[in-house]
Length: 273
Image (cartoon, rainbow, N blue to C red; front, side, top):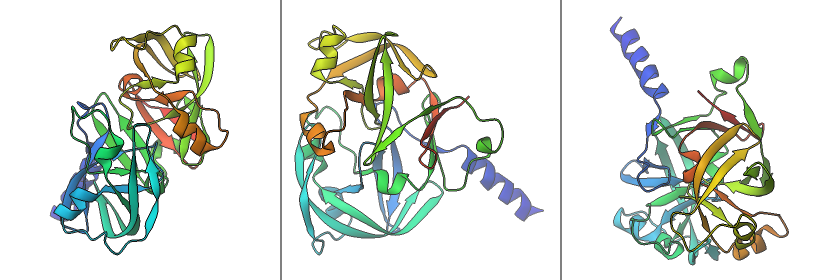
């Protein structure tokens, strides 16, 4: 009986998900690497790999010196030299992965805004593709599931299809019920970021830090009103995507009102209650 009660308690706890603090505008969760190195990593659908900050790795005696040098990693706001590294184990909530490849970089070099501390690393597509990822922004909770979630075995909730372009989740986004453009859904973007061309088309004053767009929608299924937006030059991102059309990033200023699940297997984003 005691064993059964303990098992039921563990199941209930797992279903509650992994808490995250939304104050910095991105989804960051606590992780453990190699059984001892504890840090806070961003859940980053805009990243292709698992990235570890070099300084944090050194502080926690994680070796990167033997890794192979890679091509410089380019973010929207900066770039960093990169080196491969091997991780024996990665723990995220109740999930544990073994023998994981990672990339060591200087995360601070990729971020111009220094008002908030950079995360200790980024968990990108190479890890996230293994899971069904539910982000419940109103409850500040994330759930990772390797097995198919129960909600997919019955009547499916409303959903929005996406295209996989390299590692990016590309969705058609409608602004003000009239302008439809392709954008990438990015859990590590604090705002909805618009290309300068799209900002001009929407007549957004990019100099105003409180600039908003009246209505933003994904497929008429996931909709937010009065969404804060910023503008960013996407030239480096567009050049890396080799001709893929992209006019911005869908970030927390849109997502924070919703609970959604990303299904990489079916290329669907589900709106959850």
